[in-house]
Length: 341
Ligand code: DAH
Image 1 (cartoon, helix red, strand yellow):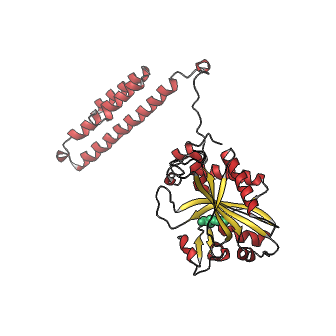
Image 2: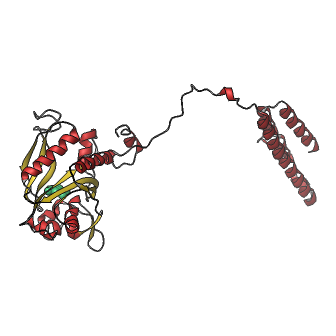
Protein backbone atom coordinates (compact mmCIF):
# COMPACT_ATOMS: atom_id res chain seq x y z
CA UNK A 1 0.00 0.00 0.00
CA UNK A 2 2.88 2.28 0.82
CA UNK A 3 4.31 1.60 -2.61
CA UNK A 4 1.06 2.55 -4.34
CA UNK A 5 0.91 5.74 -2.30
CA UNK A 6 4.38 6.78 -3.43
CA UNK A 7 3.61 6.00 -7.06
CA UNK A 8 0.42 8.00 -6.80
CA UNK A 9 2.11 11.09 -5.38
CA UNK A 10 4.86 10.96 -7.99
CA UNK A 11 2.36 10.61 -10.86
CA UNK A 12 0.33 13.56 -9.61
CA UNK A 13 3.44 15.67 -9.23
CA UNK A 14 4.51 14.83 -12.80
CA UNK A 15 1.12 15.77 -14.27
CA UNK A 16 1.13 18.99 -12.24
CA UNK A 17 4.53 20.10 -13.44
CA UNK A 18 3.54 19.26 -17.04
CA UNK A 19 0.42 21.39 -16.41
CA UNK A 20 -1.53 18.72 -18.18
CA UNK A 21 -5.14 18.12 -17.22
CA UNK A 22 -5.20 15.10 -19.53
CA UNK A 23 -2.24 13.52 -17.75
CA UNK A 24 -3.98 14.14 -14.44
CA UNK A 25 -7.11 12.41 -15.68
CA UNK A 26 -4.95 9.45 -16.68
CA UNK A 27 -3.54 9.31 -13.14
CA UNK A 28 -7.08 9.27 -11.79
CA UNK A 29 -8.01 6.36 -14.02
CA UNK A 30 -4.78 4.46 -13.27
CA UNK A 31 -5.37 4.61 -9.54
CA UNK A 32 -9.05 5.16 -8.87
CA UNK A 33 -10.61 3.79 -12.09
CA UNK A 34 -12.57 0.53 -12.19
CA UNK A 35 -9.39 -1.38 -13.00
CA UNK A 36 -7.07 1.06 -11.22
CA UNK A 37 -4.37 0.11 -8.75
CA UNK A 38 -6.23 1.01 -5.59
CA UNK A 39 -9.40 -0.75 -6.68
CA UNK A 40 -7.45 -3.84 -7.72
CA UNK A 41 -5.58 -3.87 -4.43
CA UNK A 42 -8.82 -4.02 -2.49
CA UNK A 43 -10.21 -6.74 -4.75
CA UNK A 44 -7.20 -9.04 -4.47
CA UNK A 45 -6.99 -9.20 -0.71
CA UNK A 46 -8.22 -12.43 0.81
CA UNK A 47 -10.19 -11.16 3.81
CA UNK A 48 -11.00 -14.70 4.96
CA UNK A 49 -7.41 -15.11 6.06
CA UNK A 50 -7.34 -11.91 8.10
CA UNK A 51 -8.24 -11.42 11.71
CA UNK A 52 -10.87 -8.84 12.64
CA UNK A 53 -8.15 -6.46 13.74
CA UNK A 54 -6.27 -6.87 10.49
CA UNK A 55 -9.44 -6.29 8.44
CA UNK A 56 -10.16 -3.09 10.36
CA UNK A 57 -6.68 -1.75 9.95
CA UNK A 58 -6.54 -2.67 6.26
CA UNK A 59 -9.93 -1.01 5.64
CA UNK A 60 -8.99 2.23 7.28
CA UNK A 61 -5.63 2.44 5.50
CA UNK A 62 -7.33 1.76 2.20
CA UNK A 63 -9.81 4.56 2.85
CA UNK A 64 -7.02 6.92 3.77
CA UNK A 65 -5.32 6.12 0.51
CA UNK A 66 -8.50 6.69 -1.48
CA UNK A 67 -9.12 10.01 0.24
CA UNK A 68 -5.56 11.08 -0.32
CA UNK A 69 -5.89 10.23 -4.01
CA UNK A 70 -9.17 12.11 -4.42
CA UNK A 71 -8.00 15.18 -2.52
CA UNK A 72 -4.59 15.47 -4.14
CA UNK A 73 -6.11 15.01 -7.58
CA UNK A 74 -8.62 17.80 -6.90
CA UNK A 75 -5.89 20.10 -5.59
CA UNK A 76 -3.65 19.37 -8.59
CA UNK A 77 -6.56 19.98 -10.94
CA UNK A 78 -7.27 23.36 -9.33
CA UNK A 79 -3.58 24.31 -9.60
CA UNK A 80 -3.52 23.41 -13.30
CA UNK A 81 -6.70 25.39 -14.03
CA UNK A 82 -5.31 28.34 -12.12
CA UNK A 83 -2.15 28.46 -14.19
CA UNK A 84 -3.97 27.99 -17.54
CA UNK A 85 -3.44 30.97 -19.83
CA UNK A 86 -6.22 33.54 -19.56
CA UNK A 87 -7.85 35.21 -22.55
CA UNK A 88 -6.12 38.44 -23.31
CA UNK A 89 -8.10 41.61 -23.93
CA UNK A 90 -7.08 41.63 -27.57
CA UNK A 91 -8.44 38.11 -28.09
CA UNK A 92 -11.89 39.73 -28.28
CA UNK A 93 -13.37 39.21 -31.74
CA UNK A 94 -15.81 42.02 -32.38
CA UNK A 95 -16.80 40.53 -35.73
CA UNK A 96 -18.02 37.24 -34.23
CA UNK A 97 -21.78 36.84 -34.68
CA UNK A 98 -23.76 37.45 -31.47
CA UNK A 99 -25.49 34.65 -29.62
CA UNK A 100 -28.89 36.16 -30.42
CA UNK A 101 -31.75 36.51 -28.05
CA UNK A 102 -35.01 34.61 -28.21
CA UNK A 103 -38.02 36.86 -28.16
CA UNK A 104 -41.38 35.62 -27.03
CA UNK A 105 -44.21 35.78 -29.53
CA UNK A 106 -47.87 36.53 -29.11
CA UNK A 107 -50.48 33.92 -29.86
CA UNK A 108 -52.35 34.46 -33.17
CA UNK A 109 -55.64 34.84 -31.30
CA UNK A 110 -54.09 37.49 -29.04
CA UNK A 111 -52.86 39.30 -32.15
CA UNK A 112 -56.31 39.18 -33.73
CA UNK A 113 -57.90 40.34 -30.47
CA UNK A 114 -55.48 43.24 -30.04
CA UNK A 115 -56.13 44.36 -33.58
CA UNK A 116 -59.92 44.23 -33.16
CA UNK A 117 -59.71 46.10 -29.86
CA UNK A 118 -57.66 48.81 -31.55
CA UNK A 119 -60.06 49.21 -34.44
CA UNK A 120 -63.16 49.29 -32.23
CA UNK A 121 -61.56 51.72 -29.79
CA UNK A 122 -60.86 53.98 -32.75
CA UNK A 123 -64.62 54.01 -33.35
CA UNK A 124 -65.43 54.99 -29.78
CA UNK A 125 -66.15 51.54 -28.35
CA UNK A 126 -65.10 50.60 -24.82
CA UNK A 127 -63.39 47.23 -24.31
CA UNK A 128 -64.82 45.25 -21.39
CA UNK A 129 -64.03 41.78 -20.10
CA UNK A 130 -66.62 39.65 -18.34
CA UNK A 131 -66.24 36.53 -16.20
CA UNK A 132 -65.59 33.14 -17.79
CA UNK A 133 -67.54 31.47 -15.00
CA UNK A 134 -70.98 32.89 -15.57
CA UNK A 135 -74.45 32.57 -14.14
CA UNK A 136 -77.12 30.77 -16.07
CA UNK A 137 -79.10 33.99 -15.93
CA UNK A 138 -76.66 36.18 -17.89
CA UNK A 139 -75.72 33.42 -20.31
CA UNK A 140 -79.26 32.34 -21.19
CA UNK A 141 -82.24 33.82 -19.35
CA UNK A 142 -81.31 37.49 -19.77
CA UNK A 143 -80.75 36.78 -23.46
CA UNK A 144 -84.31 35.64 -23.91
CA UNK A 145 -83.43 31.94 -23.73
CA UNK A 146 -85.60 30.59 -20.88
CA UNK A 147 -85.14 27.18 -19.28
CA UNK A 148 -87.40 25.24 -21.57
CA UNK A 149 -86.38 27.02 -24.79
CA UNK A 150 -85.09 24.73 -27.56
CA UNK A 151 -82.37 27.30 -28.35
CA UNK A 152 -80.55 26.04 -25.23
CA UNK A 153 -79.77 22.92 -27.21
CA UNK A 154 -77.74 24.99 -29.69
CA UNK A 155 -75.02 25.41 -27.09
CA UNK A 156 -73.64 22.36 -25.29
CA UNK A 157 -72.72 23.57 -21.87
CA UNK A 158 -70.24 22.79 -19.10
CA UNK A 159 -72.29 22.96 -15.89
CA UNK A 160 -70.63 23.80 -12.61
CA UNK A 161 -72.19 23.83 -9.14
CA UNK A 162 -74.79 26.37 -7.94
CA UNK A 163 -76.28 27.07 -11.37
CA UNK A 164 -72.93 28.41 -12.56
CA UNK A 165 -71.57 27.53 -15.98
CA UNK A 166 -68.54 28.15 -18.17
CA UNK A 167 -69.88 30.82 -20.50
CA UNK A 168 -70.88 29.40 -23.86
CA UNK A 169 -70.67 32.78 -25.61
CA UNK A 170 -69.46 36.30 -24.89
CA UNK A 171 -73.06 37.50 -25.43
CA UNK A 172 -73.36 36.75 -21.70
CA UNK A 173 -71.78 40.16 -21.16
CA UNK A 174 -74.55 42.09 -22.90
CA UNK A 175 -76.98 42.39 -20.00
CA UNK A 176 -74.22 42.65 -17.39
CA UNK A 177 -72.94 45.71 -19.24
CA UNK A 178 -76.32 47.30 -19.87
CA UNK A 179 -77.23 46.94 -16.18
CA UNK A 180 -73.94 48.47 -15.13
CA UNK A 181 -73.51 51.33 -17.60
CA UNK A 182 -76.99 51.95 -19.04
CA UNK A 183 -77.52 53.66 -22.40
CA UNK A 184 -76.18 55.10 -24.64
CA UNK A 185 -73.26 52.70 -24.93
CA UNK A 186 -70.83 51.21 -27.44
CA UNK A 187 -68.72 48.33 -26.19
CA UNK A 188 -67.04 45.11 -27.19
CA UNK A 189 -66.37 42.08 -25.00
CA UNK A 190 -63.63 39.82 -26.31
CA UNK A 191 -62.87 36.60 -24.46
CA UNK A 192 -62.77 32.88 -24.02
CA UNK A 193 -65.84 30.69 -24.29
CA UNK A 194 -66.42 27.02 -23.63
CA UNK A 195 -68.69 24.37 -25.08
CA UNK A 196 -69.02 20.71 -24.40
CA UNK A 197 -67.94 19.75 -27.93
CA UNK A 198 -65.87 16.95 -29.31
CA UNK A 199 -62.72 18.38 -30.78
CA UNK A 200 -61.96 18.15 -34.51
CA UNK A 201 -60.15 20.39 -37.06
CA UNK A 202 -62.84 23.05 -36.80
CA UNK A 203 -64.35 22.52 -33.31
CA UNK A 204 -62.79 23.15 -29.92
CA UNK A 205 -64.21 23.04 -26.42
CA UNK A 206 -62.35 26.31 -25.74
CA UNK A 207 -62.48 29.16 -28.24
CA UNK A 208 -62.63 32.95 -28.45
CA UNK A 209 -65.36 35.35 -29.47
CA UNK A 210 -65.64 39.10 -29.59
CA UNK A 211 -69.15 40.23 -28.79
CA UNK A 212 -70.15 43.84 -29.27
CA UNK A 213 -73.15 46.09 -28.94
CA UNK A 214 -74.31 49.60 -29.60
CA UNK A 215 -77.36 51.01 -27.82
CA UNK A 216 -78.55 54.52 -28.56
CA UNK A 217 -81.51 56.42 -29.94
CA UNK A 218 -82.67 55.48 -33.48
CA UNK A 219 -80.17 52.68 -34.10
CA UNK A 220 -81.06 50.73 -37.23
CA UNK A 221 -79.81 47.90 -39.41
CA UNK A 222 -78.09 50.54 -41.58
CA UNK A 223 -75.83 51.43 -38.61
CA UNK A 224 -75.07 47.74 -38.07
CA UNK A 225 -74.02 47.24 -41.69
CA UNK A 226 -71.91 50.40 -41.74
CA UNK A 227 -70.00 49.43 -38.58
CA UNK A 228 -69.44 45.85 -39.72
CA UNK A 229 -68.16 46.93 -43.15
CA UNK A 230 -65.79 49.45 -41.63
CA UNK A 231 -64.41 46.96 -39.15
CA UNK A 232 -63.89 44.22 -41.72
CA UNK A 233 -62.26 46.58 -44.23
CA UNK A 234 -59.76 47.52 -41.54
CA UNK A 235 -59.11 43.94 -40.42
CA UNK A 236 -58.52 42.73 -43.97
CA UNK A 237 -56.95 46.03 -45.07
CA UNK A 238 -59.14 46.48 -48.16
CA UNK A 239 -62.68 47.43 -49.07
CA UNK A 240 -65.06 44.52 -48.46
CA UNK A 241 -68.56 43.61 -49.56
CA UNK A 242 -70.96 42.10 -47.03
CA UNK A 243 -74.47 40.72 -47.20
CA UNK A 244 -77.09 39.96 -44.58
CA UNK A 245 -79.17 36.79 -44.52
CA UNK A 246 -81.88 36.09 -41.98
CA UNK A 247 -80.61 34.08 -39.00
CA UNK A 248 -82.31 33.04 -35.79
CA UNK A 249 -80.98 33.99 -32.37
CA UNK A 250 -83.45 34.55 -29.51
CA UNK A 251 -81.68 37.73 -28.32
CA UNK A 252 -81.96 39.69 -31.57
CA UNK A 253 -84.92 40.63 -33.75
CA UNK A 254 -84.43 40.70 -36.64
CA UNK A 255 -81.40 38.38 -36.54
CA UNK A 256 -78.87 37.96 -39.35
CA UNK A 257 -75.91 36.05 -40.57
CA UNK A 258 -73.44 38.53 -41.99
CA UNK A 259 -71.44 37.05 -44.84
CA UNK A 260 -68.21 38.43 -46.27
CA UNK A 261 -67.70 38.44 -50.02
CA UNK A 262 -64.77 36.03 -50.41
CA UNK A 263 -61.47 37.86 -50.55
CA UNK A 264 -59.70 34.93 -52.17
CA UNK A 265 -61.83 34.65 -55.32
CA UNK A 266 -63.51 38.05 -55.37
CA UNK A 267 -66.90 36.42 -54.92
CA UNK A 268 -66.76 34.13 -57.97
CA UNK A 269 -66.76 30.96 -55.85
CA UNK A 270 -63.74 28.88 -54.78
CA UNK A 271 -62.89 25.82 -52.65
CA UNK A 272 -62.62 27.98 -49.50
CA UNK A 273 -65.96 29.79 -49.77
CA UNK A 274 -68.02 27.58 -52.07
CA UNK A 275 -70.50 30.10 -53.43
CA UNK A 276 -68.46 33.29 -53.09
CA UNK A 277 -69.58 34.22 -49.54
CA UNK A 278 -68.05 33.39 -46.14
CA UNK A 279 -70.31 33.20 -43.10
CA UNK A 280 -68.57 35.42 -40.56
CA UNK A 281 -70.57 37.41 -38.05
CA UNK A 282 -74.00 36.59 -36.61
CA UNK A 283 -75.76 39.79 -35.56
CA UNK A 284 -79.04 41.64 -35.29
CA UNK A 285 -81.06 44.33 -33.58
CA UNK A 286 -81.17 43.74 -29.84
CA UNK A 287 -84.43 42.11 -28.76
CA UNK A 288 -86.61 44.47 -26.62
CA UNK A 289 -86.74 41.78 -23.91
CA UNK A 290 -82.93 41.88 -23.60
CA UNK A 291 -82.95 45.65 -23.29
CA UNK A 292 -85.58 45.34 -20.55
CA UNK A 293 -83.41 42.82 -18.66
CA UNK A 294 -80.65 45.44 -18.87
CA UNK A 295 -82.94 48.08 -17.34
CA UNK A 296 -83.33 49.99 -20.61
CA UNK A 297 -86.65 51.14 -22.05
CA UNK A 298 -86.99 49.71 -25.58
CA UNK A 299 -89.42 52.50 -26.51
CA UNK A 300 -86.68 55.03 -25.97
CA UNK A 301 -83.57 53.12 -27.10
CA UNK A 302 -82.67 50.53 -29.71
CA UNK A 303 -79.42 48.83 -30.54
CA UNK A 304 -77.54 46.19 -32.44
CA UNK A 305 -75.32 43.33 -31.28
CA UNK A 306 -72.87 41.07 -33.05
CA UNK A 307 -70.68 38.11 -32.19
CA UNK A 308 -67.38 37.86 -34.07
CA UNK A 309 -65.88 34.38 -33.99
CA UNK A 310 -62.42 35.53 -32.95
CA UNK A 311 -60.83 32.11 -33.28
CA UNK A 312 -62.29 31.76 -36.75
CA UNK A 313 -61.15 35.24 -37.72
CA UNK A 314 -57.58 34.49 -36.56
CA UNK A 315 -57.60 31.23 -38.50
CA UNK A 316 -58.72 33.01 -41.67
CA UNK A 317 -56.40 35.94 -41.26
CA UNK A 318 -53.29 33.86 -40.56
CA UNK A 319 -54.16 30.76 -42.60
CA UNK A 320 -54.35 28.32 -39.66
CA UNK A 321 -56.04 25.21 -41.06
CA UNK A 322 -56.63 23.18 -37.91
CA UNK A 323 -58.14 24.76 -34.79
CA UNK A 324 -56.30 22.26 -32.57
CA UNK A 325 -52.95 23.98 -33.21
CA UNK A 326 -54.23 27.02 -31.35
CA UNK A 327 -54.64 25.36 -27.95
CA UNK A 328 -51.92 22.73 -28.20
CA UNK A 329 -49.42 24.74 -26.13
CA UNK A 330 -46.57 24.10 -28.59
CA UNK A 331 -44.46 27.27 -28.71
CA UNK A 332 -43.53 26.56 -32.32
CA UNK A 333 -47.04 27.72 -33.22
CA UNK A 334 -46.50 31.12 -31.57
CA UNK A 335 -42.97 31.49 -32.88
CA UNK A 336 -44.28 31.69 -36.42
CA UNK A 337 -46.12 34.87 -35.54
CA UNK A 338 -43.32 36.68 -33.76
CA UNK A 339 -42.73 39.08 -36.62
CA UNK A 340 -46.35 40.07 -37.07
CA UNK A 341 -46.58 42.68 -34.33
N1 DAH B 1 -73.79 34.30 -29.19
C1 DAH B 1 -74.01 33.67 -30.48
C2 DAH B 1 -73.27 32.32 -30.51
O1 DAH B 1 -72.27 32.19 -29.89
C3 DAH B 1 -73.54 34.54 -31.58
C4 DAH B 1 -74.35 35.79 -31.78
C5 DAH B 1 -75.44 35.78 -32.61
C6 DAH B 1 -74.04 36.96 -31.14
C7 DAH B 1 -76.19 36.91 -32.85
C8 DAH B 1 -74.81 38.12 -31.34
C9 DAH B 1 -75.88 38.06 -32.21
O2 DAH B 1 -74.55 39.26 -30.75
O3 DAH B 1 -76.59 39.20 -32.42
O4 DAH B 1 -73.72 31.44 -31.17
